[in-house]
Image 1 (tube, rainbow, N blue to C red):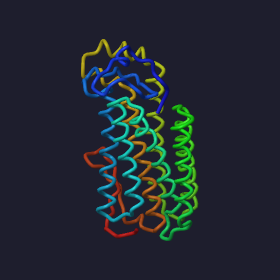
Image 2: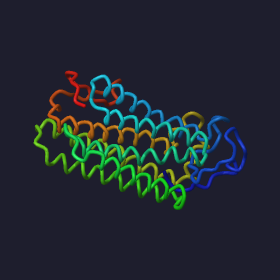
Image 3: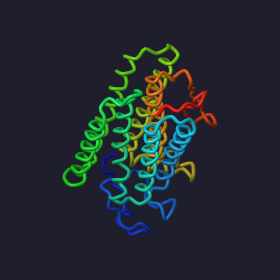
Image 4: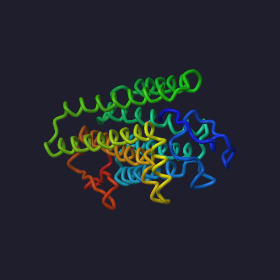
Length: 282
């Protein structure tokens, strides 16, 4: 999920998880907050993915909203857990747990958008094609092109293709103005979350040394507010959740169930879909 950041000599020292083997190291100083977690704040902020995903899973199961929707939220959960493991250890194996689930989540979202109707259109062919594509990307990344840029390009291409296809399907649907406004709002919120995360992610990469200087003059825990990679996690967790809600809503609308649902925010900041009347649609 980014470029190699030149860190301090602490990277070359053996700590609880041993020497860093990942191809990436981020701007947060290693093993400063805890001797057991390499990048404490970068690890902790992945909790936002976990919380959002668990609410999505619970809502989808409670209201019987479909196995593929549950799978999408499970994918978001794996993204958060994998990223937390990576930032805690800075190992190459856990780096793959951080990066690869992002691709698989996009593939799940794309499948859910294509097969959003009551009847399956492509049978086993579409899952087979998506699995083959993701397997090819995974093998290429692990064995030949071990560059974060390759992963970023693959992730961006998959994500953009999924959103573009979903938007085209949305435009073709005969839906109420109320539902269309919800589509537009979810897309906008998802875009703002992802774009805002990408912006602070770049700031963290470009101005790392300056940010470290600023943090050295601020007492803990307030220096955590300048851990911009952590803000990337928080913002993209929101962006990803709103985009999954958009996928979720597309499925409901394609099955003429959009009038049965509403979007609520638990504690004012955790969005999830709740059906007004539980009805099995899988």
